[in-house]
Length: 399
Image (cartoon, rainbow, N blue to C red; front, side):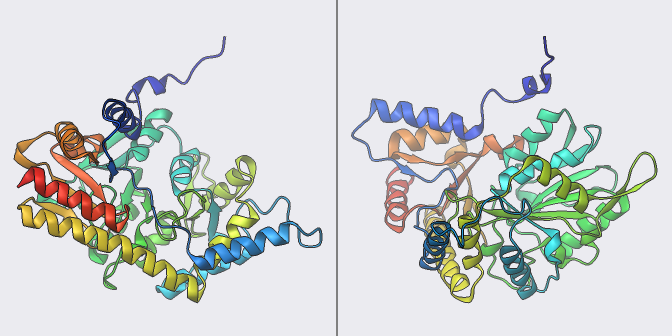
């Protein structure tokens, strides 16, 4: 009989958003007449932008013609998309080689799969509260996980503790779930820590397009020395509405190397390439053509409009909470609002209260970690009309 990976027994019984879905389904069954407004899961609502749709149609036409048909493509992504991403980074002052860019079907996939490169004996450092995938993928492998306290006192932006050693460090900025954004100086401190401890930073930049202040870094590679100690994940899901289309990219610098137990110096770029060519067949040609359109001049303009729409929703939520006297974080350079639960309620208590009394769904902060207890995440990804209606319901039950 085969042996199981018994580390799965150390996971929570179900994924956070599965728990939410069960409660919402039960409420819907009991109250079929209630119109539920969903502001929990970070899924987008606007359709794909015209520049992308046009590129997708063009790619489909190519696939319908024997002369321009594409079968298996390069596992690391087509050159036209990698070059477009390279140009996007250059526009923000970051120089990359196309061979450092790997196209994938989602940042969530890559954040989980990147652990293939690292031994299970590595110590992992993760801020709390945090996106659950960072924790769960390492628990599945059996790694030791240490937590850094992210809280209101430090603006939900914990800094390195020189007395704690870690081998792998997860950072997310703009942060999911709190919406907090690291400054350049703060990221410099993290890079210095990683270099000193010979650690690797796994930097999630999925929400970089929401940053509206040029002084705030969109990439960890804006910091000198980061290419020697960091891997970056980015996604088109929120930037261009690709949640149902699936396309993302991971940057593994050539400068990032580590010493193996036998003394040989190994390139993480080459290791990731080997991993992807072994376990992944690449993103479809059609999708990659659509993704490349995101980085065209018109695509960038349309993408900014889309992001601006969601940021305006977040401002509407923030203004409502300010009117109600409820403290919150985020919502400026992020689609997420991280609010304190009113009247001293616990996270799941407020979830049930909001669902039962306003038919509005959010995400309990406790689902993101110990420090999330007493907080609640709302997203700006609903339609403008639904966001406005949800805020009217908030006022009706919380004034």
